Amino acid sequence: MGKLLAAVTLGLYIAHQDFWFWTTADPLLFGFLPAGLWYHALYVLAASALLAALTKYAWPAELEREVEEMLREDKRR
Image (cartoon, rainbow, N blue to C red):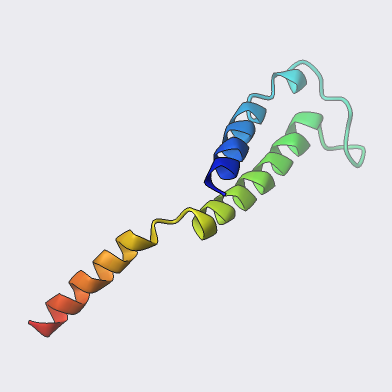
């Protein structure tokens, strides 16, 4: 899972360099939304989904356990 998340992160990083929409506003989505703006809106949704996946699958749980143990020890004192 870690390699997949790393590959998706790299892909999203590369996709963020949207040089293909810099010179034109066409096509317009819904007749008024420029291509660069709707591309960025979709990018933000993809980045949010990636961050949710990273939080769920790549969060260092052992660090949280260490902090919880330290807090429990402090309360005992």
